[in-house]
Image 1: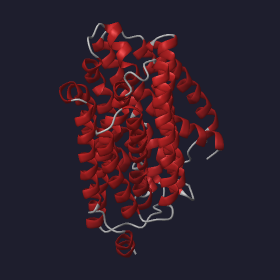
Image 2: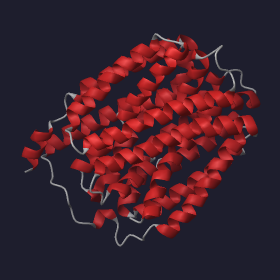
Image 3: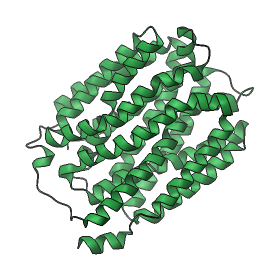
Image 4: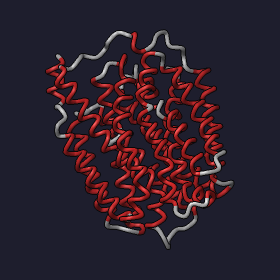
Length: 390
């Protein structure tokens, strides 16, 4: 993979997360312009994007394996750019919901296609996944930073237009730099030892279940942090651009966790490392639920470090135990189930906070982390998998 194409695959991950979180960052400004009383009442209009981010992963993964990953990444870059521009042109909440849903369809392409394309010949897949995760999380940070700045400067519509132009430009560069695939991944020879059926299913179920709890926490935090930050720092910071900068700092610091975890995954077994990360999630969310002001800000950095640290595990399991010929389809199925379920967190976030407040939301997040830690205990050990596959 040429360096420019690899770089663009990482940039694509950043753009994928950036686009999905522009709305959550700018929701107060959008609600004001559309005449909606509270930001919580606007949040359900974005659920279509997250539902399609999950469900769209199945056809995206299938096309990636059977048609080609290069072609699908071109569809991703151009589709994301054009649909973001369409969002910027909306005039009503219903139009916004439709345009965001279309954006979600194209956003579904990246994870089952871009990540398998990036790691298919990697000698250190854990580190590759860690760097890619860092790129995705920097996209989240950029969503907070760039959206806050652009909303203050020219309004929320420009916050969608500018990244849209960037995505189309990346698509042009990718078409020029990415080599044409000689054959679709599904037609290549198997390179991974096959696990026995019962262990393969057990691993897949654990992978999907933990991916669901991880995705729930990811959606709760990344869609709720902007408003949570404004509430917990009320009276200390009020300027939107400064709040955006503080939120971006949380994501920038937390994103480094994926580099560390990715490197550790090249050395250590998955199960104990994953359990340790989820245990620390339980603790950090519990502490955040009981704090405010700058103490909450420190706790928020801690829980986002743990949320981001949990992300590389599912992709690492796919790389270790699934042959490249079908990685996009397996990843697509996993993402469809996990994000299909976790998208409900986005739908219910506004009503939940409106009824119960952010303190109860953080307590619920701690409970979700505890469920994930319990599920990880059912993952077969590394030695058990190697003995069974030998």
